[in-house]
Image 1 (cartoon, rainbow, N blue to C red):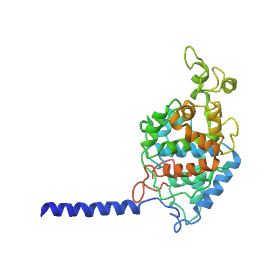
Image 2: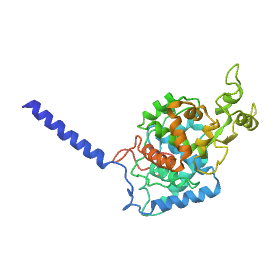
Image 3: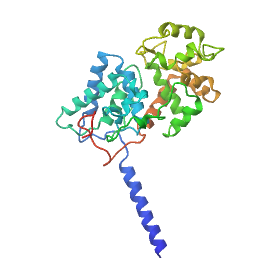
Image 4: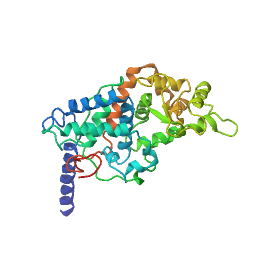
Length: 323
């Protein structure tokens, strides 16, 4: 009798837990009643920032990725030092990404109906989608995230993909967050509007190995172009475009570049050199529609990683510090 009672209690608890999880899911139109104009407000703020500098687009997209891969999509990356931002992997994040979210948050909170009702995490997610004004796909953004209260430098360690990763390392890291190899390749395509500092790939063009200074998987002509842009002892603040053909347009040129050995990072080029991922690269190179569809699916899944919903976390009044 006691066993049956325990089973019943467990079943009820499981049902309640499941119901709670379902009710706490992200959804489009989350602010329809509390702040129905939130998307337009964020869109206007992002557009104004984008008109000031193109860097806004890749910076915000990269900021969203770095946030979601560490502690989930909870805007913990936005908290001021000491925080995740002190880790070397985050110190290269462009300030324009942070500024975009700050400006959008201020714009949202100027509306009396919206003040302190929209999370910084959701504003970052919206700004990321709206910042694809470079020709990227439009997609409905799921909302309902809450902001995290914790951000540490240590939490970033071993949490972000590195420029020298091989396919196994990439897949392991992305699979940890419920993202497939196809998702990973599609999200890598965001490098079509990205930029990188010379130090992140200098080994590939100067000292790949004692016998082969230049990485043989790198297009030789492209390698010499990189040497011109990134001479030895170059200013570490110098950054170059990751897409040498159409760096200001969100398109499938990234994958076409990989076919020609023009992937800037090892972790880029390996997507083509490894037979297990080459077919997907070829598919995205041949069909921009296929890339766009896969990217929308992947970034939507990315936006669900480790989210705080319901009563978890908080709605920060200032994105740079907890309430």
